[in-house]
Image (cartoon, rainbow, N blue to C red; front, side, top):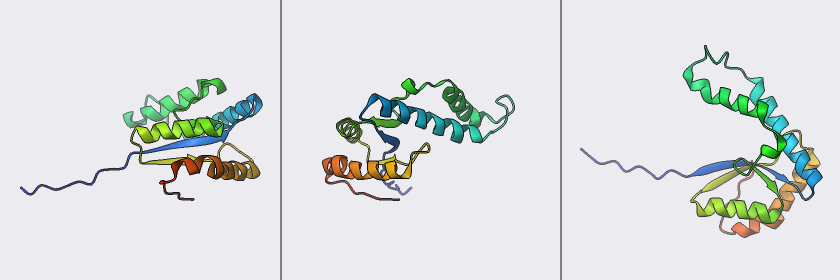
Length: 139
């Protein structure tokens, strides 16, 4: 039997990103993120948990978690919410853990377009230079 070589797969992750320099900005970003999760996650219904296929359990669990999540419960497992130095620290940690690619979502939760553009520019000015060897793709 011929041995087939499989290519190593990339390790990927994604984050929603919000800059917050003040407690007010932090709170607004957290509320915006929850609104997004609740509206997007709540808009689709795979039916009743008892009659839906077992493969939909994760989705039902997510919806349950979002209903009970408070803004202060949001953490760095899925949302980068901070200043540039903290965002750099989190992304460097991901790099050290072996992640090959991280997708960042700036435009989320009814964030005003001007704010999205400002945060993207700030990221490119303050954060991206810390990853000089990284490739950048803009979608």
